[in-house]
Image 1 (cartoon, rainbow, N blue to C red):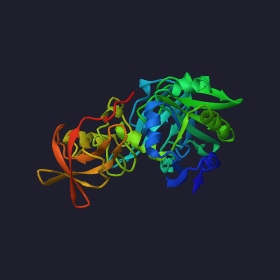
Image 2 (cartoon, rainbow, N blue to C red; image 1 turned 45 degrees about the vertical axis):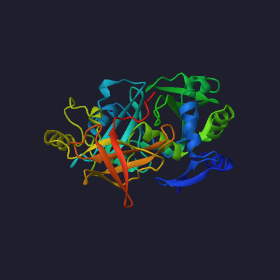
Image 3 (tube, rainbow, N blue to C red; image 1 turned 180 degrees about the horizontal axis):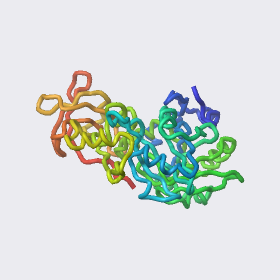
Image 4 (tube, one colour; image 1 turned 180 degrees about the vertical axis):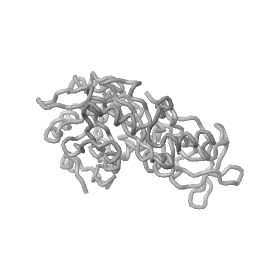
Length: 348
């Protein structure tokens, strides 16, 4: 089990800890997941996301290595920007990981894999695992930048999907205008030895600590995919309705041929949003039925604190349309639902 540089801080705040991707991380604090969720939608919160990997790739060939490995096209952006991308299995185009690339300077990239996927990303692109040298704090919410400006103004000034080097207490940090909540904010990679001082400054400045429980309900309201649920083995970018992350103009990338073959024949399932009435939430692996026939399966489901009813993402047959009425089989009982546009809560 790995531990964040902020482990003692979480425990001092009474956090309920949980294993996640090989790390012991805070699930929620005393206020609870719903309160933390609403604090992010209405104000500003800070998440410890140090469990995310950081693979440093540098050198004159760094960009070309990433271009060949990943689906998206770095030529769309430049140094000082971030980009969302996929790493595919070369044989069947499964999404082995979905990744944010921080392009720091001309020949330096920080590639941010999901918690348990760092080794497979290094196998594909090389680089050095620098995860243990830093903590990553995600400050998110409609007032996140305003609050952060009084504490760490350099970081607050980093725009959406931009990347900049900043200094905290004399130590170099990397800040990106990214997040996983559908709200405005930044993610700050701070040296491990300075993580506590930054965390305390943020919390003392009125930014609410939030755990992985709220992060998950927030990303679900924003219809953002979670690896192992909406992405993973047997799931392609096309099935997950994420073709926008695929740069077909590039001559090659890992898994291109297999993904193109699927595009030509059409994916056998597609990801859609489902809304249900009442507080009872749909859950992952529940069957989705239409007119009594199974058409798919829930990948993620929960109660939406903002909408105050159940929401879910599901892989369903490609003929499924917005507005279709469906039934979700929840342990043998029927939960009526309807297919709706996503995101469930508008991204800001």
